Image 1 (cartoon, each protein chain N blue to C red):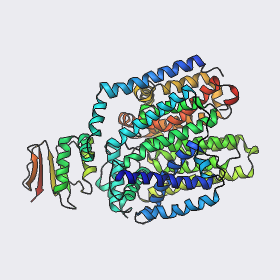
Image 2: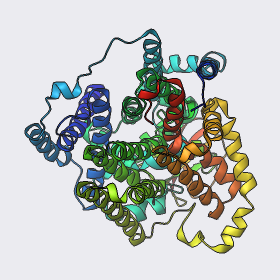
Image 3: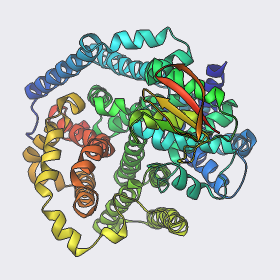
Image 4: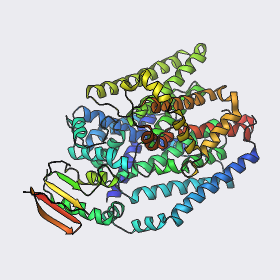
Length: 462
Length: 133
């Protein structure tokens, strides 16, 4: 019975995301697997944000709280949308070649294998039972966000990190509210479904950019087969979602910058930018990185940006800024402080002391570069591409992705430099998870360079 | 752009696939993951949680959860603080809260003696529950 409810849960999340997609993309620019995947990811995210906002405003968690308003949006979206649903969700494709069929099968294997591993076990990994799933259980059993929630969890649960955003916990709480029972086998389904949905979107975005369906399939398989990435679709932690939200925020912004006259892309980027902020504390840094990319784009194309483009840029910056400010004010108001990095650690003394840690930090990165079991050879490919590509890494549109990657590594390294936490412990427990955040963007970056040299030039625009 | 030539691309892909297949096969067949997954597949949800938490430890947690009245606080003895087992126990036993001044002491593989507590039940010599007098 629970799995029947989970099917309804997945359909409701998909329906909510689809409704929003139909409103922001009236003409159906986003179709097929991209629309399917994006709808699910958007739906899960919107429900989590909605439930969080309603909970923090003191409302009780009920099915109606979420389903009624979004059902209204769903109905309205059919009147607003100009593209028929069948056309939007249907896929038109030419007959695949033999290599394409092989890679589709490999991707399907990876997805099914991940799904199987996920639902076999309850929530059991360390961060899951210490942080995300525990908060989800507490919130569900409370039926709301209790007035003293953050103080309560800080006092009663060591290591629960009350300052962490509630995206994953709220998504799990919604599963329990929707199904009417606490079942942490069922809530595990969030993760492999998000993994599958993301691979569909990643493939579609990559195909838009590099043109070649075969190469897009190859790189989608490469991303999905990175053990560290698909393992995080199994264990119930937030890092895969962090990587998904950051990469979709950046990649859709990139699509908007390329295609200039398609505001749909910047709206999708904005939605996932807000989700980034609500997924993990690192989301604040990652959303800032995307904003920095937008700033550089604006500076480079200042004269070429029309009124509509300018409005999009202002709206984007304002919404991300407002969402970030709201969360920071909320955190500060509740006395929530991050243990790994907080403003009190950003001192000249910590900088000088922290610079001495650079050899250890670089050694840790090196371990991952050659950590084939977790990462296959993706970081070797990234380094090889960077070395061989040279200055062309920062030419044309590629600059934006390169810039985002450079800012990512600089800012995450700065965390290790400034943090007052014992560096051995911090590196050992965080580096392999942090790299998941940049993995999809890195694969996308390598795919662009690969395709520049391996497919006819007229289809390799990136 | 002369970065990845086609022949290198094929070589890279071959290396990728070889490593991917090697690590999956090693985990599944040589490290026993497949046996574990198959064993989990035939169990019900309670059995699967027992498999993951460890049958013996989960038996004690389940027994304790069934014994403690609503609102009772517990203390774990014999489980290393902040270890994975400890985290799983705290998660599983919620809404019971852990406390230093607990109503119940859950002793796992350790001797527990305290005049303020009395024996309340147990599964065997290694798994006992004590209640505050």
